[in-house]
Length: 249
Image 1: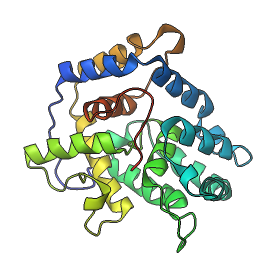
Image 2: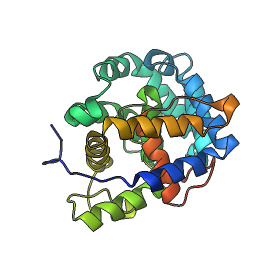
Image 3: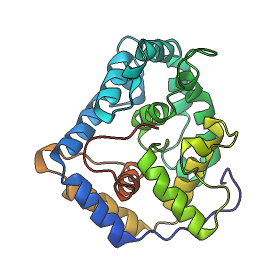
Protein backbone atom coordinates (compact mmCIF):
# COMPACT_ATOMS: atom_id res chain seq x y z
CA UNK A 1 0.00 0.00 0.00
CA UNK A 2 1.36 3.43 -1.00
CA UNK A 3 0.91 6.31 1.44
CA UNK A 4 -0.09 8.96 -1.08
CA UNK A 5 -2.63 7.24 -3.37
CA UNK A 6 -2.37 5.03 -6.50
CA UNK A 7 1.09 3.79 -7.45
CA UNK A 8 3.02 5.70 -10.09
CA UNK A 9 4.83 3.74 -12.80
CA UNK A 10 8.21 5.37 -13.34
CA UNK A 11 10.42 4.23 -16.22
CA UNK A 12 14.03 4.70 -15.14
CA UNK A 13 16.46 5.48 -17.96
CA UNK A 14 18.90 2.68 -17.20
CA UNK A 15 21.64 3.92 -19.53
CA UNK A 16 21.60 7.37 -17.94
CA UNK A 17 21.43 5.88 -14.44
CA UNK A 18 24.43 3.64 -15.08
CA UNK A 19 26.41 6.54 -16.55
CA UNK A 20 25.66 8.61 -13.42
CA UNK A 21 26.71 5.80 -11.08
CA UNK A 22 29.99 5.24 -12.92
CA UNK A 23 30.78 8.95 -13.03
CA UNK A 24 30.12 9.44 -9.32
CA UNK A 25 32.05 6.31 -8.36
CA UNK A 26 35.03 7.71 -10.22
CA UNK A 27 35.64 9.88 -7.13
CA UNK A 28 37.83 7.83 -4.78
CA UNK A 29 37.15 10.36 -2.02
CA UNK A 30 33.38 10.02 -2.46
CA UNK A 31 33.51 6.22 -2.35
CA UNK A 32 35.86 6.36 0.64
CA UNK A 33 33.31 8.55 2.43
CA UNK A 34 30.60 5.94 1.85
CA UNK A 35 32.92 3.24 3.16
CA UNK A 36 33.57 5.24 6.32
CA UNK A 37 29.85 5.72 6.89
CA UNK A 38 29.15 2.04 6.27
CA UNK A 39 31.77 1.05 8.82
CA UNK A 40 30.50 3.49 11.47
CA UNK A 41 26.81 2.62 10.97
CA UNK A 42 27.17 -1.19 11.01
CA UNK A 43 23.77 -1.87 12.60
CA UNK A 44 20.83 -0.02 14.07
CA UNK A 45 21.98 -0.79 17.62
CA UNK A 46 25.55 0.35 17.06
CA UNK A 47 24.53 3.44 15.11
CA UNK A 48 22.31 4.54 17.98
CA UNK A 49 24.49 3.46 20.92
CA UNK A 50 23.87 6.29 23.40
CA UNK A 51 27.48 6.53 24.57
CA UNK A 52 28.88 6.94 21.04
CA UNK A 53 26.07 8.32 18.87
CA UNK A 54 27.78 11.71 18.86
CA UNK A 55 30.56 10.15 16.77
CA UNK A 56 28.08 9.38 13.99
CA UNK A 57 26.59 12.87 14.21
CA UNK A 58 30.01 14.48 13.79
CA UNK A 59 31.14 12.07 11.07
CA UNK A 60 28.05 12.47 8.91
CA UNK A 61 28.04 16.24 9.28
CA UNK A 62 31.72 16.46 8.36
CA UNK A 63 31.65 14.07 5.40
CA UNK A 64 28.42 15.27 3.82
CA UNK A 65 28.54 18.97 4.64
CA UNK A 66 25.19 19.21 6.42
CA UNK A 67 26.42 22.38 8.14
CA UNK A 68 25.50 21.68 11.74
CA UNK A 69 28.63 23.66 12.57
CA UNK A 70 27.02 26.96 11.53
CA UNK A 71 25.00 26.90 14.76
CA UNK A 72 27.13 26.50 17.84
CA UNK A 73 25.76 23.73 20.01
CA UNK A 74 23.35 22.22 17.45
CA UNK A 75 25.36 19.01 17.02
CA UNK A 76 25.55 18.58 20.81
CA UNK A 77 21.80 19.01 21.17
CA UNK A 78 21.04 16.54 18.36
CA UNK A 79 23.45 13.93 19.76
CA UNK A 80 21.96 14.32 23.23
CA UNK A 81 18.42 13.89 21.94
CA UNK A 82 19.37 10.82 19.91
CA UNK A 83 21.03 9.28 22.97
CA UNK A 84 17.98 9.96 25.16
CA UNK A 85 15.66 8.34 22.63
CA UNK A 86 17.97 5.52 21.56
CA UNK A 87 15.86 2.60 22.85
CA UNK A 88 12.67 3.91 21.26
CA UNK A 89 14.40 4.57 17.95
CA UNK A 90 15.97 1.10 17.83
CA UNK A 91 12.57 -0.50 18.44
CA UNK A 92 10.94 1.67 15.74
CA UNK A 93 13.58 0.90 13.12
CA UNK A 94 13.67 -2.81 13.93
CA UNK A 95 9.96 -2.99 13.15
CA UNK A 96 10.73 -2.26 9.49
CA UNK A 97 11.12 -5.17 7.09
CA UNK A 98 13.81 -5.09 4.38
CA UNK A 99 11.30 -4.52 1.55
CA UNK A 100 8.89 -2.18 3.32
CA UNK A 101 9.82 0.91 1.29
CA UNK A 102 8.48 -0.67 -1.90
CA UNK A 103 5.81 -2.94 -0.40
CA UNK A 104 4.50 -1.07 2.64
CA UNK A 105 5.66 2.56 2.43
CA UNK A 106 3.03 3.49 4.98
CA UNK A 107 5.13 1.64 7.59
CA UNK A 108 8.20 3.63 6.58
CA UNK A 109 6.23 6.86 6.84
CA UNK A 110 4.99 5.95 10.32
CA UNK A 111 8.58 5.20 11.36
CA UNK A 112 9.72 8.52 9.87
CA UNK A 113 7.07 10.35 11.88
CA UNK A 114 8.55 8.76 15.01
CA UNK A 115 12.21 9.15 14.15
CA UNK A 116 12.78 12.40 12.27
CA UNK A 117 11.28 14.76 14.89
CA UNK A 118 13.93 13.61 17.37
CA UNK A 119 16.37 15.57 15.22
CA UNK A 120 14.00 18.12 13.66
CA UNK A 121 12.61 19.15 17.04
CA UNK A 122 15.76 18.73 19.11
CA UNK A 123 15.05 22.06 20.80
CA UNK A 124 11.36 22.94 20.27
CA UNK A 125 10.70 26.65 20.03
CA UNK A 126 14.39 27.48 19.84
CA UNK A 127 16.29 29.60 17.33
CA UNK A 128 17.93 26.53 15.77
CA UNK A 129 17.00 25.36 12.28
CA UNK A 130 15.47 21.89 12.04
CA UNK A 131 18.23 20.28 9.91
CA UNK A 132 15.84 18.32 7.69
CA UNK A 133 18.56 17.14 5.32
CA UNK A 134 20.76 15.92 8.16
CA UNK A 135 17.84 14.07 9.77
CA UNK A 136 16.99 12.17 6.58
CA UNK A 137 20.64 11.31 5.94
CA UNK A 138 21.28 10.17 9.49
CA UNK A 139 18.35 7.76 9.51
CA UNK A 140 19.17 6.58 6.01
CA UNK A 141 22.53 5.36 7.24
CA UNK A 142 20.93 3.70 10.26
CA UNK A 143 19.01 1.25 8.04
CA UNK A 144 20.14 1.91 4.40
CA UNK A 145 16.90 0.54 2.84
CA UNK A 146 14.14 2.73 4.20
CA UNK A 147 14.79 6.44 4.56
CA UNK A 148 15.45 8.40 1.36
CA UNK A 149 18.31 10.90 1.47
CA UNK A 150 17.16 14.51 1.08
CA UNK A 151 19.40 16.96 -0.71
CA UNK A 152 19.05 19.89 -3.06
CA UNK A 153 20.46 18.21 -6.15
CA UNK A 154 18.26 15.10 -6.01
CA UNK A 155 15.09 17.07 -5.28
CA UNK A 156 15.54 19.16 -8.45
CA UNK A 157 15.66 16.05 -10.62
CA UNK A 158 12.79 14.27 -8.86
CA UNK A 159 10.57 17.37 -8.95
CA UNK A 160 11.20 17.91 -12.67
CA UNK A 161 10.51 14.24 -13.50
CA UNK A 162 7.28 14.21 -11.50
CA UNK A 163 6.06 17.45 -13.08
CA UNK A 164 6.86 16.13 -16.56
CA UNK A 165 4.73 13.06 -15.80
CA UNK A 166 1.92 15.06 -14.21
CA UNK A 167 2.39 13.35 -10.85
CA UNK A 168 0.63 14.91 -7.87
CA UNK A 169 1.65 15.62 -5.19
CA UNK A 170 5.32 16.24 -6.00
CA UNK A 171 8.57 16.43 -4.09
CA UNK A 172 9.05 20.18 -3.80
CA UNK A 173 11.62 21.91 -6.02
CA UNK A 174 13.25 23.44 -2.94
CA UNK A 175 12.44 24.00 0.71
CA UNK A 176 11.36 27.57 -0.04
CA UNK A 177 8.44 26.08 -2.01
CA UNK A 178 7.06 24.07 0.91
CA UNK A 179 3.82 26.14 0.92
CA UNK A 180 2.82 25.30 4.47
CA UNK A 181 3.94 21.67 4.41
CA UNK A 182 5.83 20.43 7.42
CA UNK A 183 9.08 18.59 6.74
CA UNK A 184 7.46 15.32 7.78
CA UNK A 185 4.59 15.87 5.33
CA UNK A 186 7.03 16.64 2.53
CA UNK A 187 9.15 13.63 3.42
CA UNK A 188 6.15 11.40 2.76
CA UNK A 189 6.50 12.41 -0.90
CA UNK A 190 10.10 11.22 -0.97
CA UNK A 191 9.01 7.89 0.52
CA UNK A 192 6.23 7.55 -2.05
CA UNK A 193 8.56 8.41 -4.93
CA UNK A 194 11.28 5.94 -4.05
CA UNK A 195 8.78 3.27 -3.04
CA UNK A 196 7.03 3.52 -6.41
CA UNK A 197 10.28 3.69 -8.36
CA UNK A 198 11.80 0.62 -6.70
CA UNK A 199 8.53 -1.33 -6.94
CA UNK A 200 8.54 -0.75 -10.70
CA UNK A 201 12.09 -2.02 -11.29
CA UNK A 202 12.47 -5.55 -12.55
CA UNK A 203 14.68 -8.03 -10.73
CA UNK A 204 17.14 -7.84 -13.63
CA UNK A 205 17.27 -4.03 -13.47
CA UNK A 206 17.85 -4.08 -9.73
CA UNK A 207 20.62 -6.62 -10.01
CA UNK A 208 22.27 -4.68 -12.82
CA UNK A 209 22.28 -1.40 -10.86
CA UNK A 210 23.73 -3.12 -7.79
CA UNK A 211 26.39 -4.88 -9.86
CA UNK A 212 27.39 -1.74 -11.77
CA UNK A 213 27.62 0.27 -8.58
CA UNK A 214 29.85 -2.29 -6.88
CA UNK A 215 32.08 -3.00 -9.88
CA UNK A 216 32.66 0.67 -10.71
CA UNK A 217 33.88 1.61 -7.22
CA UNK A 218 37.66 1.83 -6.63
CA UNK A 219 38.77 -1.69 -5.72
CA UNK A 220 40.03 -1.06 -2.18
CA UNK A 221 37.00 0.98 -1.10
CA UNK A 222 34.12 -1.09 -2.43
CA UNK A 223 30.95 -1.45 -0.41
CA UNK A 224 27.70 -3.15 -1.38
CA UNK A 225 25.15 -0.37 -1.30
CA UNK A 226 21.40 -0.70 -0.96
CA UNK A 227 19.32 -0.02 -4.06
CA UNK A 228 17.94 3.08 -2.33
CA UNK A 229 21.47 4.45 -1.85
CA UNK A 230 22.36 3.66 -5.47
CA UNK A 231 19.30 5.49 -6.81
CA UNK A 232 20.14 8.44 -4.58
CA UNK A 233 23.54 8.55 -6.29
CA UNK A 234 21.81 8.74 -9.67
CA UNK A 235 19.60 11.70 -8.82
CA UNK A 236 22.30 13.48 -6.84
CA UNK A 237 24.66 13.30 -9.82
CA UNK A 238 22.00 14.21 -12.38
CA UNK A 239 21.11 17.25 -10.28
CA UNK A 240 24.65 18.58 -10.50
CA UNK A 241 26.43 16.74 -7.68
CA UNK A 242 30.04 15.81 -8.30
CA UNK A 243 32.12 13.77 -5.88
CA UNK A 244 32.30 14.04 -2.12
CA UNK A 245 30.54 17.26 -1.17
CA UNK A 246 26.81 17.31 -0.53
CA UNK A 247 24.66 20.41 -0.64
CA UNK A 248 22.65 20.97 2.54
CA UNK A 249 19.01 21.98 2.30
